[in-house]
Image 1 (spheres, each protein chain N blue to C red):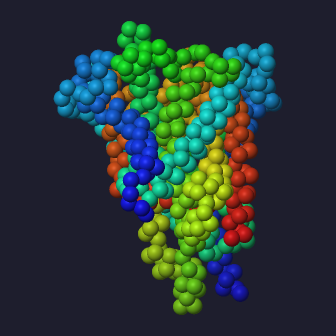
Image 2 (cartoon, each protein chain N blue to C red):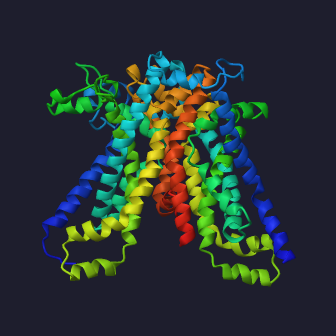
Image 3 (spheres, chains in turn orange, red):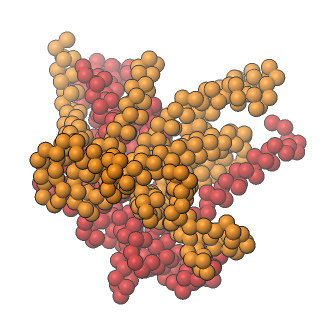
Length: 310
Length: 284
C-alpha cells in the first residue's frame, strides 16, 4: 500500500530528531570519550595524540602511584557498597512490602513514609546524613555520637564516615554512606514488591489456605517464587545505580581521609574537572560504563524479549 | 478477617511503626535543626532536642544569605531551578509523547533495534559522556548557560519519557486508531484527534517524573554551570554545606527549601510518582 508506505516514512521522520540526538549525545559522545581515554590529554587544552592503553595501565598498575592506589580502593569500595546496599534494599524492601500486604489500617500513610525519600535529591540526603553521622570530637560528640553519649553508650562511639579503619579491603567508613543510600532507596524495592504482591490473585491465596497451608508456607512456596523476576529487576536497577553513584557520596563525605569513601564517580569528577586530567577521567568513565553495560545489556535483552513474547 | 485479639497483628503494627520512626529520623533532624538559632545549633549536646522556640531566622538566611559571612542565599538558585526544570520537563515530555506514539502504533522497520538502543541511554553513567558534552556545549555557545543545561536534560530525558509513553499508548486500543484512519486521518491526524486527547494520565506521570528528576539532578548542573548565580538549588545547597563556615541551622533550612517542591508533588500526586518509578524498571 503506497499510502501506508508514505505514513511509515512520516512516522520515521517524527522520531528522527530523537534518534539523531541519541546517536550524537549517547553513542557519539561515548566514542569520543573512548578516544580521549586513549589520548595524552592532560591539561586545559585538548591533546588527542595517541597514548594507547597507557592511562588504563596506570590505573591498574600493581606498583602504581597514587592514581592506581586510589582506583583500587574505589573498586573495592564500589564492590562492598553495592553488595551491602543491594542486600539491605531487597531484604528490608521485601519485608516492608509483606508487612503492608497484611491488610493493615493506614497502609497509605506507612507507604508514603517509606517511599518519600525516593522523591528527594541525593544532595538533600547527603547533606542531612552528613549532619547526622558527623562524629564530633571526644569531648564534643555530634550526631549519632551525641545520642550515644546521652544514653550512656559512649563505648559505641566511633568515627563513622571519618573512620580510617578497615576490615580487609572493607572500609568501615562506608557503613554510614550505605545507611543513607538504603534509607533513600528501600522504598523503591518496597514499591516494586508491593506491586508484585498486589498482582498475586486472591484465589491463589485462598486455594492455598483451603489446602491447609500456613501463611509462612504460602509465602515460601507460592508468593516468593512469583516475586523472583521483581528481585532481578530491583537488583539490576539498584545495582547499576550504585556502580555509578556520585551525588550522594560527593555531598555526604567526599572522597574521605585516605579515600575511605571514594568511588569511581568522585575520582572521575575530581580528576577531570578539578585536576584537568582529561584522559584519566575519560578512562575511569569508560570503566564505569563497562561495568554498567555488563549488568544492563543482558537485562534489556531479557526484558524486551519477554515483552515480545507476551 | 477475624476481629479477636491477635498477637501477630500487633507485631505487624509495632514493626511498621518502628520502621516509620526510623525513616522519619532525618526529617526530625532537618526540622529541629532548621528551627534553632545559630547559638542553639552550636550546642552539640542538644542536637537531638527540640528547639527552645520556633525560630525562622535560619529560613531567612537560607533564602537571602548572610552577606557579612560571605554566604549566598538560595532564592536566586531556586528561581534557576524553576527556569531550568519547567522548559526541560515540557520539551522532553512532548518528545517522549511523539516517540512513544510512533513506537507503539507505527512500528517501522528497524524500530525494534532503535528502541533498545535508545533505552540504553538512560542507564549509562553520565560520566562517560561528560567530557564531550562540556566541550560541545562550549563550542556551540551554550557552555555555562541554563539553556545548555535545558538541552542536556531534554536529550537525556528522551529514553525514559519515550518508554513511559510507549507503554502507555500500547494500552490504547488499536481499534480506535484504525477507526480514525478509516475516517481519513493520517498519522498526525490520529495523534491530534485520538491519542493526544487521551494522553493526560501519561503526561501527568511523565511530567511528575521529569520534574522530580531534573529538579534533583546534580552531576550535569555542577559540571556545566560554574557561575554561582546560575546554578540550580542542588548545586548551591552542596556549596553551602561544603563551605568552611557551617551554619547548620541555615544549611538544614536550605535542605527543607530545596526539598519542599518535590515533596509537595510527591505527597499530592504520589500515585503518579510511583507509576513513573516503576516504569523505570523497563517493563511497564
